[in-house]
Figure 1 (tube, rainbow, N blue to C red):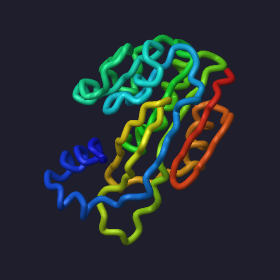
Figure 2: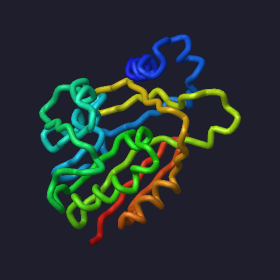
Figure 3: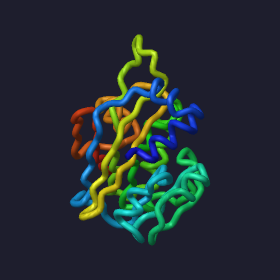
Figure 4: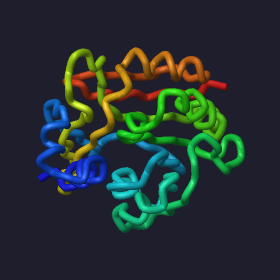
Length: 207
């Protein structure tokens, strides 16, 4: 079941029945990471919670999150966890071959995202990649729901992780939004996909 999402609902609302009334659920997402290429040293931004990228790539990964509790909840593994704000990365320029953001930006206030993209671009090596997974969040319109989210099944080889992600429904995002955000930070898009409200983008740093 959606253990992480239920925990999220409790933290927002304190009452499960109320949470069910307040949350707008989209169709469940299925993410197969088994053959997703992630090269070199990896910075996983917002890598607390489930710690999906740390589970997948182990010692290649440095997972950061501004919340100590999220890192403490993350799965054990052979990867480094550091408390850090993505708006102010404490790494030298061109440190990482890859940066990942797995269902992270949906939690970030809209006004902070440009700064985070700029910092990610700075710490990536030339030729490096930002790899992003997230969900489409449409305009709320007349809906009375306060939260928006989905159950997510993550496949890593023979391992299946049932989780979920939900956020306050006070923002909008789609594939075009993230493409434009990346281009403004200096990235080129090497591949992109939007399918059943799932977003996947590979950005490439050329200079």
